[in-house]
Image (cartoon, rainbow, N blue to C red; front, side, top):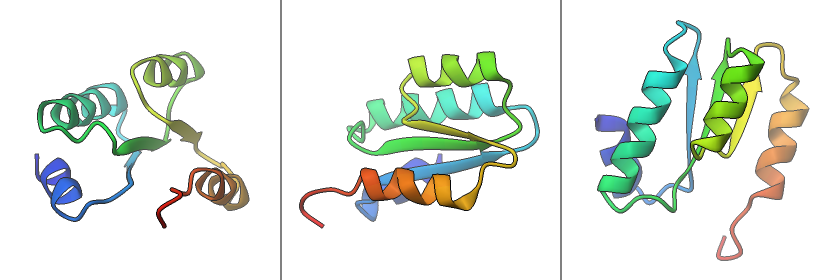
Length: 89
C-alpha cells in the first residue's frame, strides 16, 4: 500500500485516515498490518470519519492511536497532536 511505503520513506510520525465510506475497519487494519510487516510500527495511526462508537473502541483495541468522528472540533484534533509531539522534534 502506497500510504505505508510513503510514510516509512518520509519518516512520518502519524498517518491520518479519513474514511466516510464505511470501510474504516478494513482500511485501518490493512494499514496497521502493513506497518507491522514493514517495521513501521512506531508510526501512529489516527482515523476520522463516520465511525460507530463500537467500531471506534475496536479500532483503538487494534492499535489506532485516536479516533475522531464526524463533527469533531478541530481544536480537539489539534490538542491530540500537541499532546503527542515527539521529544526529538
